[in-house]
Image (cartoon, rainbow, N blue to C red; front, side, top):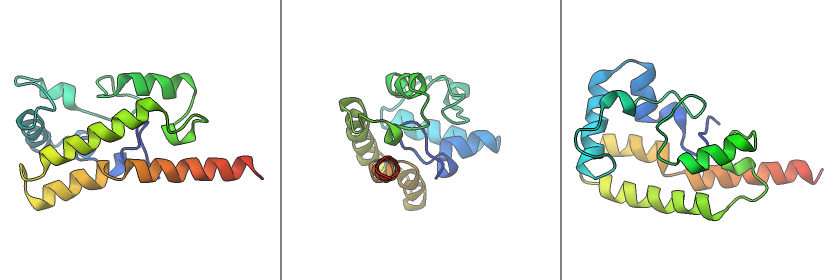
Length: 138
């Protein structure tokens, strides 16, 4: 499973896909939606929206979480002994809020793409954590 530090599914993330495919039109659409729901400020530089995954992105919306994961030399929060922590719980809440704002602001197909990339992060990180725990108990 290709998960970011916070549990986002990078392989289906519209922002990631727009970046790696050099699709400026899609990146512009994403920026428009982000500004419309208040996820980014008006006038935000589209170049700063580009994302090539957690290992390279410098404009992560959860910089504290990313630093924590990197400092522990993990790939994502589900691999951490203290998962779930208050910091990742804030991310889950922020993601829920973000998706609620996004729903109805874009087409159903677009929304499904965002939901596929972001909505399952808790479930996916829980699965990583369970697998980690099983490995420890062997």
